[in-house]
Length: 187
Image (tube, rainbow, N blue to C red):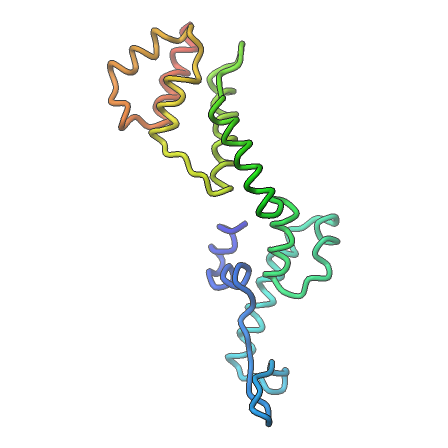
């Protein structure tokens, strides 16, 4: 969703994550107060329009269950924050989930009877979930992990051949998976 909104208008994404563009003025007592529609300039109305668009972008992609969750929200930021907590949990839940996922990453191995494609799909899902929680694993670490700790012992000869013929420090993950898949098809 982030990429879609940014692709449409980067300022709208700022409104979603940082809050609405504010239109204020000083009243007779010198206190800063929100502007009413009658007090707005053309520039102020553009801010109101951007705020409305930000809210619309979020509301339009929601199903009925999600909509009922955010129905009382008054700004795009409030909607976004509510959806984040609903889907990702509180900061404490995110930390716990990150610890659990990283443990799963550390213990990740190829299952008996699993294809390279199936293993790679599970692996990618896990690393993407970690990335969404802010725990980014470098591509070279992923390559090293698959070569040294994920594949079963029956793959030892292929692992050795790859390690001897390729520069592991610069080997791309998709290249490794392609190489392993080709080998798997010949087995």
